[in-house]
Image 1: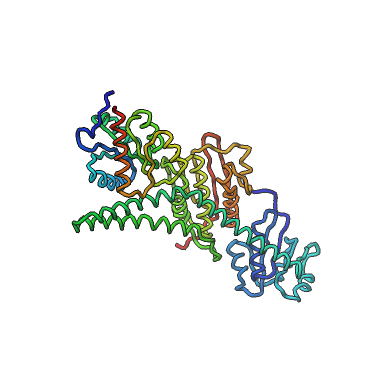
Image 2: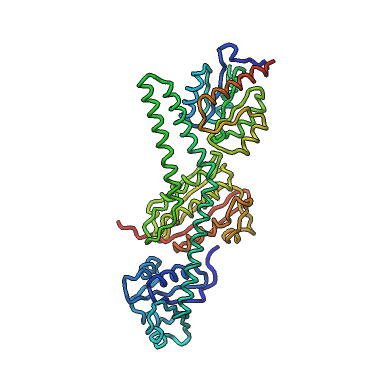
Length: 140
Length: 346
């Protein structure tokens, strides 16, 4: 499967934001759009997988941001799916759930960053920027 | 599951003050003991009220009680030096009497026991809240994230109407956090000492569900509610909340946050029945007898006190209720509670 870095065409890249709270998605969209990223949303793990597999997203998603505590396909299962099916797409966990054991385990599974809410806009942008760099490198 | 051999000690309590109240409280919970009645010459004595609340005969005529044929023990905590003679004169020949220094010693032991039990009861409740910590943190951190994000955005914003809109979001987020703190601090409070009041069990179940939800990280729980009207009993709201939180938390943990929880209330023949059913791992038949025992737990060390169900059972007996359990390994568990219905004013 050809692996396109969407960022190369549109500027800074496309980010999938997965969180069951619409207010959180709205805020994260605002923060990332200001930094020039293109944002796609999903309200739970099932929807995130659907979005990932749809049309241009399939090849053009650069970074996934995901919460753990979500209904339907919960975050943990979704994360396992992403790591397996889209290993080159960096994954940032953004969660209100402060569990260092879980953080360590996820980081070992290849998750790029584990951010515990509340997170400053700068920190989130820096984490996404770092993930975008990894994404670009993964193509080389 | 409940019931047992008939009580072997039937007690009459003389004296309705602090001593009588403490005795009534503890003795009425002891298996093998039945309180036949409480007497005090002062009809407003506190123990008489407590007795009536529990449908135990209360009288201001000690003679009625002393001469009662059904009793085999009289405990005299009146502090009246003439009472010993009066009792001797009127009691049945087989009836034993505990009075004077012996009764005072008993009272002191009971007070201590009662304090320790209350402490343990409160400790179990607070330990339970500890297990909700991560869930609570999650629910508070999400609104905090919104507050931080909008505040940061306001710092960079010049347009007044946008600033106003962001400020509204901050206020909205604050309103999301305050009920969490309120619910928890209310739950953590000690049981009030007051009288029994009318409690609507449907709304208690709803309150308990709000708190017990923190026991799960995952959100794959579906809840079915099947409530009837008039599910009202006389009781202590905090204790009933505590019992329901324990049962619902156990159910959620048995399902590992994933499955179906069913809450039901029904009224029939002057009784209110409540059931809490889960689709979790179930309890093996040989364990069913043990689950109500103090310090019995199947959880890892540090994860459970083993007192949750023991306390639920104490709460049930203080409310003159019954509790039973059915379970099938791999299918789920149902706890059934039964209370006498309050006579609601119409």
